[in-house]
Length: 376
Image (tube, rainbow, N blue to C red):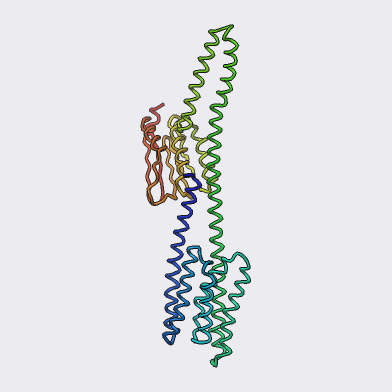
């Protein structure tokens, strides 16, 4: 599975958790309020049934909104809650019958592909207009009726619309950030591939050029100076063997590395992927230990980019050790990290120890050589 596919799966899992949180939060808030309004504001059982239909429709809309499928039921939900509000003003004398409509409408309007402002104005006009009709059929005090059926419902509609427009903008920004992060992660992996290709070119490009020249020279010498031609062929054989060895070391991250270069490369990769990185280097690293520590850093960097949804990484270097801690680790066990398993044995063979630990959404990779000075 490619890193971009893994990132997409983690993004979708995050969205699923946010949807469940939205549903729970909304229902805990809206359902008790709706039930209370029905109990307080209905005089007969059939009025209560109609008001319950309005509240139930609003709850259905909330669930569909959280799951991303609201527009499919937008029209029937709007029609039902609009009818309940009309029923409340003209029949049931219910000033809270607007409750369902001022939930469904603000959920639907910000998701419309166009004409959102017009739709928002239309919703407020309908809520206030239906309430104003109440003034024509009521014989109660006009100021009280105006407050209960026009000003309060209209004001609630305006407030909820404003909140939902801001909420929709927040989700749009989250989606843009996730998309940008996915692109950055792909770019970071592409840069790593380019770096690998560059190192491979450095190893093989020079060798192939030298081999070409030596083969041409040996071809000329084969009749005039057979001994020298044989020497050139032996050099070619040794050169090719050394190149094969270096290529294998590069492929398995065994090539001698410069720790400072690897540290800078890791920082660039993390920053390109949108991950905050902090590097602490209080002491100069022992030269011989630094080669293996560079390999640990490179392998850990690759693992973080591939397997973690990290937002921050901290790298700490000591005289003979390195510790890398990253967040964004899923609760499920990570796949087998074969590169680190191989490095653990190599570090142990050189008198050191490599440990990994996963806890509370963080992953810690640490390598240390207890007595670096003795290895010199």
